[in-house]
Image 1 (spheres, rainbow, N blue to C red):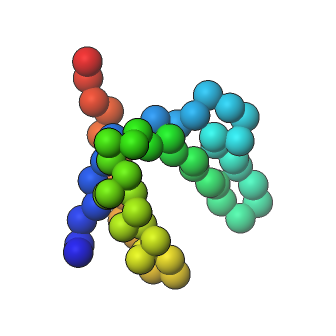
Image 2: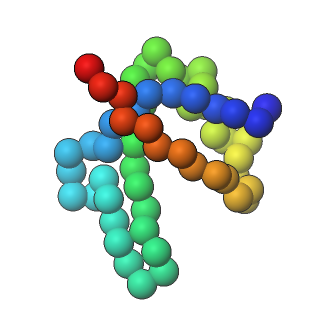
Length: 58
């Protein structure tokens, strides 16, 4: 498993994006229809991830 894909949004809450002295943290809201993909993230703990963000138009 080299790729996990799902659509998501950054929640409209203050904690959706956090910035601090050691970097930043981003939180995502993932629809239930992508839950099977999101669950795969559990296997990614303690691994370095390459994150690509594309804005879906429409």
